[in-house]
Image (cartoon, rainbow, N blue to C red; front, side):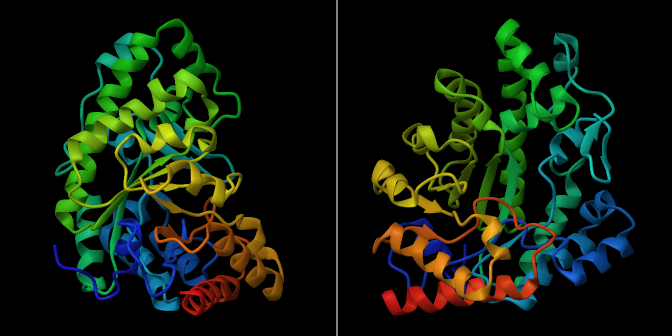
Length: 348
């Protein structure tokens, strides 16, 4: 696989020295950009935007045209796999995703099949291929998927919920059934990410967005073990990142999945995380997204403080602790990127 012209993101993932700290932003293609809102209106719906490779490619390219970001990420959604399983994915304004046919029984789980990434999910591969071609080797391209546990929470609950009552009940009463569901999803995610790599992704990321609702042995068994299975199936063909939202209390266990980097949410102290995982993994993150609402001077100071907290060590990718929110002024992101590149170049 050819090395991108700007390879500082890949070098950081390998914990090698870089000329500047690389930066990309979760949800960097999103509603805070006026051009994205225009594209979303043209597409007619979020799902149509995701399912039309040309639209998805354009969405991914929009922030790359505005900002000197160090990586592009394919525009898609973490729920593409359960959608391809025929659960009837829909999105409600203000209420988020929902499924018409949630998974609530052993029979529901048994009826699930592993989607063919070259058939039911072909549109994602085409979007990755288009994006890779348009990027032309300038920066790495990130492909992604939801973690098995995170996908299972949506599939069992039927929508995003605050109490997760259905899946916690399944975990407590029928853990073997949950293991079966997670096994199907691990195989599905591995095939899906492999297809994205073959289509041109040079990095892959697994969003374990809801692993943090578990702790202790439950977190390891139901969240991390399926991810480890994916890592073993993929192998180190390209760098692999796990976004371990809420997993800051068990970073050693996260690092043992075999990933090259851990994405951290804003609740984790970056220096403490680096001391815990040592040189086993690179770290990605983890500025509080709310700080993008601060004035320029305070935003720049927060970015410097975070980089100073990490320390003079290789293996840091600057990002937010979660996705950028729709209310952010695009100029604020330009300010953040400028400060990360400027300060880290001076400090190098």
